[in-house]
Length: 130
Image 1 (cartoon, helix red, strand yellow):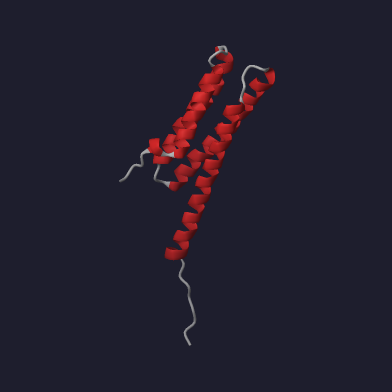
Image 2: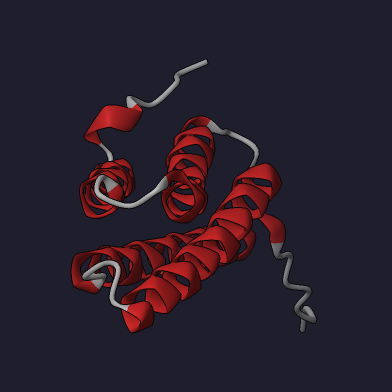
């Protein structure tokens, strides 16, 4: 069974970029403010890596849905710290938005692939013979 190389995947690249930005933005903060953001970012990278190498489509969709929830939570937390003035969350928000777009594209691609598979392999058309 072929396991794809996750390091060449764009979602993985964006997730590691997000992790890097979170660490750069939170290096001057105290642990109580920095750790939730870092945990979210690390969780996102782990789950995206798992989703990339997953062969089962249902498990892949479940992992990507979990990632979407964590990205939203990360954006909310970074926005709260931005409002207080502790971080400049522009890059975090930008990369998180790119990740959400890539995940939604992945869902769209899987849905089209399922539809194409059903049309070409699973549909039997019964036509009357005259």
